[in-house]
Image 1 (tube, rainbow, N blue to C red):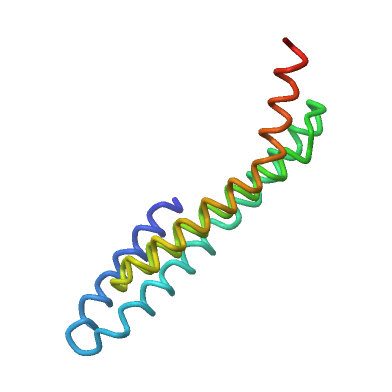
Image 2: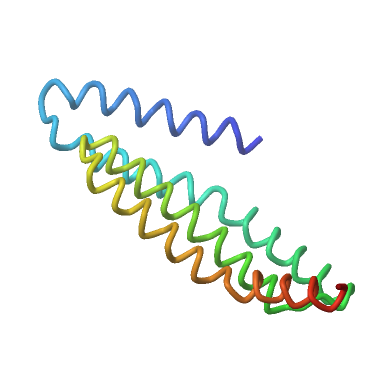
Length: 127
């Protein structure tokens, strides 16, 4: 099971970070980044299969592929933003984390405008 690998990598990273914290506290951030990348590599095949499934479903349902593409981009941005925020918070830089959070939210709002416009147009047609 992949979750056991993810938890194992997380705990190994935690142990290494706790041990290194006593001797070289500046290495804690590097451990956090490496653990995050390793976990992302483990889940990347699940992400690609999920994207293929959504793409196949949208093709069969004659759904607007532009909307699916936007939703996948928004999901990716939110995952990367959360990863960066966690790294910043782990290193004690909550001010930078809040700016990354704000930037991610603004980008997501900008990307979602075609979806919002499409929904409003559909509502206007129904009325």
